[in-house]
Image (tube, rainbow, N blue to C red):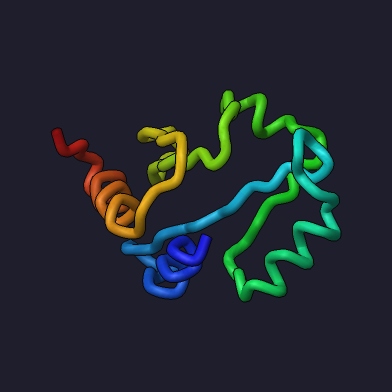
Length: 107
C-alpha cells in the first residue's frame, strides 16, 4: 500500500495523462475488519487515495477476486486491460501502468 500511495502522489489525476487509482476494501467479509476499522487503518497510515467500501462483496464477485491483493488495470474506455494477483512492487506497478496507458503488453 505504501507503493500505491507513492504512485497516487506521483501521477496526474486529471487530463490526458491521468491515472486513476482506486482501492477496494471488503469490510466484514472474510478476514476483513469493519468499514470503520478500514477507514481508521487508512487514516493512521496516511493513505489518501480513494477506497471504495464493497460492503456486500458485489464488486469482488463481479471481478472474480479470490485472492488479496488483486490489481486490475482498466483502460480509458472502461475495459479490463489485465489483472495481477498478489503483491506487486513499485517497479512492477509502473510497468503495468505504462503498458495500460500505451495499450500494449510487453512480452
